[in-house]
Structure formats: structure tokens, C-alpha cells
Image (cartoon, rainbow, N blue to C red; front, side, top):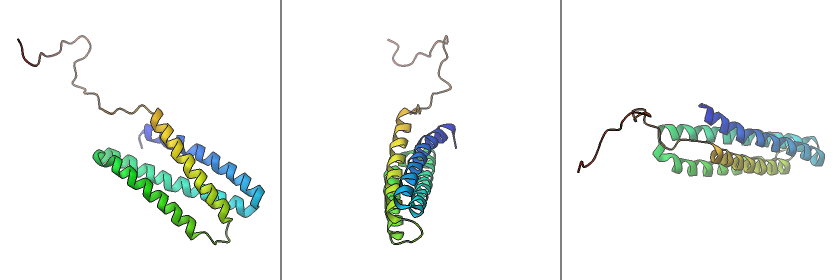
Length: 148
């Protein structure tokens, strides 16, 4: 993964982990050990789903740049749908508190999306690759176009 991609991943993952830790403490106080476990599981699910999504999106941008925007929209739609399916599948579980799980899943997802958006806005990504054959400072450019 290029350094810019790693930077964006870290700028999204670290605040999501912080939100998950806060949610685990609050859930542990409110709902006991099951609440804390639910919050930790939800945080791991968000980081896994969104991290895989970011990886797929970055690979798509490099290999098929003309599909980047459509892939991003489809990917986020699929991620949100999978998170809702995951929430519905564990709605009646006794392994952890489902309410703490659901609330942490939503909070973690919102934190990830907000921080990934912020990281993309602040990153300095070239839209056009500089041409290495361009004249250097001091070289005279070739004359092109009509000579009159």
C-alpha cells in the first residue's frame, strides 16, 4: 500500500478505535460486561468492513480509474447494507448486548466515514501525473503552433 493510502487508513482507523473505546467504556458502565463486549465487537466489525472497502477502492482507483466514482458509490452502499444485515443477524444474541453493539456500529461507521472524508480532503493527491519529459528550468521550450 502506498504511503498516502496508509496515511488515509490510519487517519480513519485511529479515531474509529477511539470512538469504539469510549463506547466500550460507556456500554460497560450502562450494560455491564455484555455491553462492553458488544461495543468491542462492533468496533472490530466497522474497522474490518471499512478497511477492506478502502483497500478495494484504492486498488480500483489504480487499476480502473474510470470506474472509481461508481465503485465508491456501490462500495459504500454495499458496506451499509452489510452492516445492517450484520446488525439484524445479531439482534437476538446472548453473546453481547445488541443495543450497545448497534449503537457502537453506527457511531463507528459515522466516525470512519467522517475521518476518511477529512483525510481525503487534506491529502495532496496529484490529479495529473507530471510529465518527466517537460522542459526543465533554463531549457528553451520547443516552438509549437503557427509561426506567423
